[in-house]
Length: 447
Image 1 (spheres, rainbow, N blue to C red):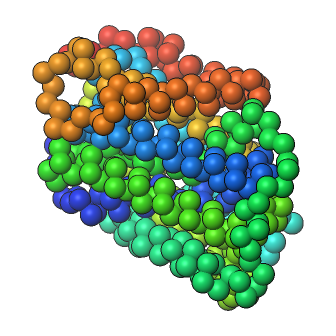
Image 2 (cartoon, rainbow, N blue to C red; image 1 turned 135 degrees about the horizontal axis):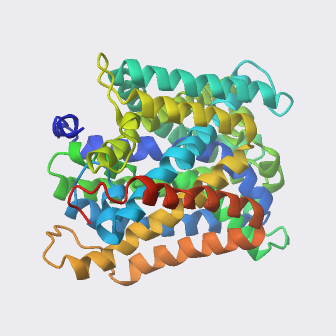
């Protein structure tokens, strides 16, 4: 595997890297999760507060990942930080979780939004035909997987086009809402208190949904080996990209709420389409639905393109079954890893609801985010001479805030939904016996 990794070329500049952060993060979350969050938090300013809190947590994480990425600009990103900061078993556990759960849940969640908005484009209500949306989602996963196996350039092109489309569409939605919303009955009164009570545990579940929408801020680190001048560009791209995402998410939710009272938001699964429909009729619905389809399909492409780099890094460390990271002799793509992720993604989307998929993803992923950020503390002790071109602002408080938020998410989920949370963690922890049975003695000299 090592020769394959050695051929990776540093061709991503600052703006390309910022575009990648935005493109991967803005998938289906901002177009689908607001309804669930409004249902869980039916108090307008508290609902906005969930999005603000989520943005602040993610910003703390982005600042921390900026230090990690600049000091260890290697392909594999989080896998490398976990391996170096906590040792090989934790690094393996992350790769295992990505392989069997995280990637499949992500593909399922993103493709679900694609299927629902696809039906909306052709005039079908997805709430009336949820099975149709699932079938379309499964087809999208298979097509994205096959495309990335046969032609990686096409996958990259789709991801690039979708970044421009979705950021532009959200900007248009925000401007149109505040400039013309008054003519269709929009009102700032929608931000006034409804007097609804919000349970602290349910607020925590809403925060999980918000974290799904914000997820992706650290995915650029998977491709660290392909970023030009990484010590300078990686931290800048992660921080600037995250700030732009927070800005567009907060203004988009404000626009949704300005047009739709929170009770209407809670019932609107396809809030972007409904908001544009209020402003421009069926033309607005069709326009934004097509954009969301492009957006989510681009995210599917980007996800299938980026995540196999984790498995490359693991295979290079002799910490993965060799066939999983095998490269196709003709197309030079990790076809088995992509195929496996696609099959598991289809299984997920056909058996789980959108909310279950997003909750599973966040619950499986965020403990590893917390451990990655925690590696800042262990590495400053174990590797004091490691070159750190960028050091996290507000150390040691900023990383601690992020870790505390991750612990809160996990503990709250264990209290409010113990069965599903326990199943998720059980699947992740199954990786430990696999590691000790097959990979404990296959070291390449690392920790």
